[in-house]
Image (tube, rainbow, N blue to C red):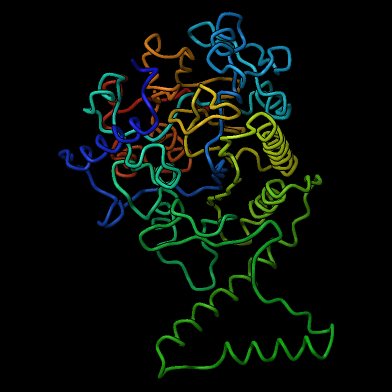
Length: 466
């Protein structure tokens, strides 16, 4: 019986299926593993993509909750002691999915609820990395090709960044944007991919990398020459080091070149961004402060010479095996407030039409409770926000939340098979960013596996305004 499938058995089955996927024949499409990246054609324009990764696996079935009577009862029965009281939820009005579901949000998300009602934000339901459409039977008999390391934080977090769950690569789709747009980048030019989360795979290309900043700005040496004799001496010493040549020592020379380039970029970045005054005061949370810096960077994009940019942020701490209700309530409040502030600031600065923000997370969680929390799952929900979004919708296929034999997506313990691959969402975001439609299969070569789900080469979401 499915209800007796243990997590160990689930992981063993997933590993076996993942190994089978690596041995399966591949199609003759351009690969983005160890070969050269695809020669992307990208239209130039003022656009920015902002990715907020909810690191650890957000329990999104308590973020976006079915609210119509029969669907809420199903939710409450499956979630048990994790179910939120119906009268505490924030109803999302004027939308029903094709199964007649109405929806509501976690009570800690009033800003997101308002953005949904203003049609500036939509949800994408039951999405996760997928190699091919996967049925329950195919999963259980181990004939399905499933993502490597299913239920593993490290692997699934990486798959969200690469959208290549069939292989392990160190480059991401944001990185390939930079390979194409900044192929001839000069030493003092800021990379178009800006990270507020340090090193990441999503922004690594074959030849390009990201530029790291924090919620307080760029990292480098800034000394006010007028402050003191000590500060003036520090600046002179640093300039002497930067102007030294170590031609006989390749290691020192390389390190110095990198330091010199970083300092040049830091000065250019700081001078451009620090001129920008924000129209609102952001909250003091780390996420709000990071998004405030993103807003400043986007406003300074012309002076930085970066009309097209990507941003990568991590909000860590969503692995709620314990104390789910209290911890998620606190964190969803931070997320909702930060997203609301960011969108408001962009609108007041006249930048909201050129920015799309979206969330991701390692995986969804189990519908079932482990006592005081939920465990690692697979399919979950994400958000997409911006003026270009056809907002006020729940896109994709919101799954039934029943357990066991009654649910064709439940493969044990309330782990749900996703019905939408990340590739479909990322393809549409990429085309909005300027990637030519004919180049999309080179960025996301698994998309062709889903051609049978629609009358087009791959499924489309009614996500963006024309």
